[in-house]
Amino acid sequence: MTAYDPPGRPQTGAADHAYGAAADAYGATRTAYDVVVLAGGAARRLGGADKPGVSVGGRALLDRVLTACAGGGTTVVVADPRTTARPVTWAREDPPGGGPLAALEAGLHHTTAPYVVVLSADLPFLEETTVRRLVDALGAHGGEGVLVTDPDGRDQPLVAAYRAAALRRELTALTAEYGGLAGLPLRRLTGALELTRIADPVASFDCDTWEDIAAARERIREHGHVLDEWISAVKDELGIDLDVDTGALLDLARDAAHGVARPAAPLTTFLVGYAAARAEGGPEAVAEAARKAAALALRWADENTPDAGPDAG
Image 1: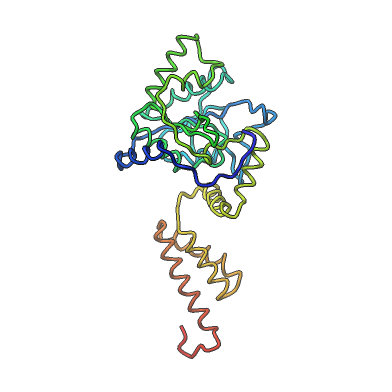
Image 2: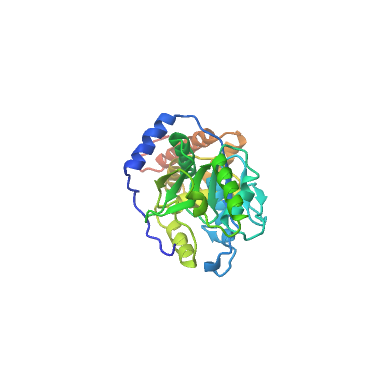
C-alpha cells in the first residue's frame, strides 16, 4: 500500500448485515483466542529498516498492534526478541526469513486456543474492537476464518481470525506437498480455507513504505483523532489499563482554568487522578473525584462574580 485516503464511514453491504444478524444470534458467548503477530519481514520497501520498531504517534508499530490484541490469551510474536510494552511469547521460523507460512507455523506451536488471530506488525490503526469483531464473526459464521478487506476489496490475510485446527490441517498438507513451507505465499493457505470477509478500511491500512508511515503520522494528529491517540499512548507508556470519561475531565480542566486560574487545570486533574489512585478505585473513583473537584471550581468561580453576596457558595 502506497497511499492513504482517510476513509469515511465504511459502506455496509449484504455481507455486513448478515454478519450483524449472525453476531446478535451468537450472543454474549465469547470464545477464547490466541494471537500470532508476524514481525520478522525484511521491510525491503523501507530500505531494510526495523519496521516493527518504527514509531507512529510515539509508539512502535508492534506495540500498537499488541495493544489492540490485549484481550487475547497467549500472544506470540514471530521475530527476534525485543522490548515490548506488553509481555509476549517469542518464536522464530526455521529458517529465519522463511516467509509468512513458515512464521505462522512457528507461532502456532505456542498456541492452544480454538481461534487464532493472525496479524502483521505494521497496522497503526488496528483497534481491539476490530479484533473482537473478527473473533465474534468467526464464531457466528461457523467457517474457517474471517479476514478484513481493504478499501479496494483486496483480502488482508494478516488481519484475520482463523480456526486453529484449520490452519494446522492446511499447513500440514502444504508441508507434505511442497516438502516445507519456506518461501510459499499466504494464498496457498487462504485459498484452501472457507473464509468470510469484513470491510474495514481503517484497520486494513498497513505501512509498507515511508509514504505510508508519513500518512499514518499525519492522520493521528488530525483534530478528530489526536486526543484519543495521545491518551492511548500515555496509558501504554505508564502501564495503565483504565478507561475514564475524558469529557468529564476536560470539563473539569475548563472550569478550573476559567474559575480559578489557567495553571489550576493540569494541577487539578492530576490531583483527581491521585485521589482516585489513593482510593484504589477504577473509573468510578475518577468520576467521583472529578465531580467533587468540578463542584468546588464552580463554587470558587461563583464567589468572584460581581453580585456575589456574603453567602455565595
